[in-house]
Amino acid sequence: MSENENRTFICIQCPVGCTVLVERAGDAVRLSGNQCKRGEEYVMQELANPTRVLTTTIWIRHGTHPLLPVRSREEIRKELMKACVRELSRVHVEAPVKCGEVVHKNVGGTGIDVVATRSIERRNHEKIHPGD
Image (cartoon, rainbow, N blue to C red; front, top):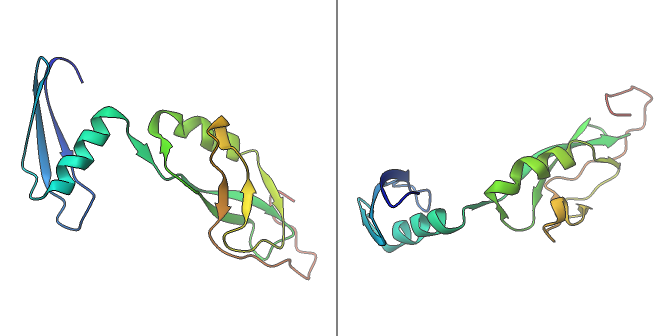
């Protein structure tokens, strides 16, 4: 955000979804529109260092489903998300996989592991899925 810029955020910290206006003049930052302290903290975090939990899918071989839903154990810097997703697009795991199991370590060199968000059993038939 530049020295003299106004920007609007929608707070995602609670169901209210306040629209928070950020007005910056030099070093001074003024927030308005948030209905609680959490909105202020959220917007300040977004301005300083935006992070997100990465959620996506990866290929699973010999599973009852062709894709395994996964997420990062911790939030990742927003600017690194595309590289992390690109890396995970090349990852294949072998069934069975249990929910919570680490399926990829240190995604994008962040030091953060990626875990399965559901269990997928090994399939007992020979139907072929993409990624096998």
